[in-house]
Length: 271
Image (cartoon, rainbow, N blue to C red):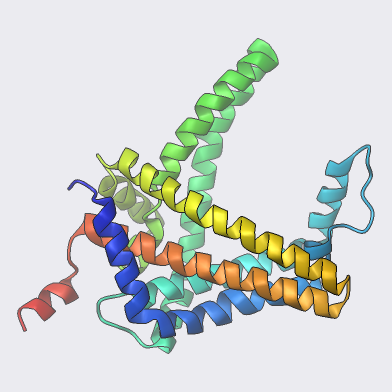
């Protein structure tokens, strides 16, 4: 099936409009509130590290993430549950918020397993050639192979972009099967999907930059205090929630288009 960008976007906006209240509830619980909490628990997220070594800024950043790694890990887990729960809300059987959250919890471990398999595969398929090229041909060869690897990485990310909807909407909890099905569904549409995702990323990126500038302005005006952190964290949380809801609706629309109508949708048609 040839992927239709216009149809995918129309279905995305339709899902947003039809489910906005329930989507807002889950996004608020699992995306907005955790991001707000992180801003209060790790103020350096908004203000930057208190002391940066000008001679080795990378060491400062490494120390920052090492010190606060547990918070970022917990945020990633909570947001993963939220994303999967948001997807579950878009199922044709129209689950309640509680049912959607339960689906998110059940799908979490298989989803994490799928992501680890993808990361391991990428590291082997792309990391090894770059390392060999750098070792054998020097930095220049490493850069050339690295650029090729970056293109291949983008291709792989497009091919596995439907893993989460395959797991939640398609009910495929086997990580390897979900990856294989995502690869199959995107066959023949990789370039169209890449263009669609890129246009979306550019559009959202512009909005994100504007909101980040406004957030930074508020924090600067209010100063490095609780009020500044609260406002900045709230704005970041709102942006993260909107982005998560939009991405979920986009991948759900793409998945529905490429996989065809579900059993529930077909049943409703003939009722």
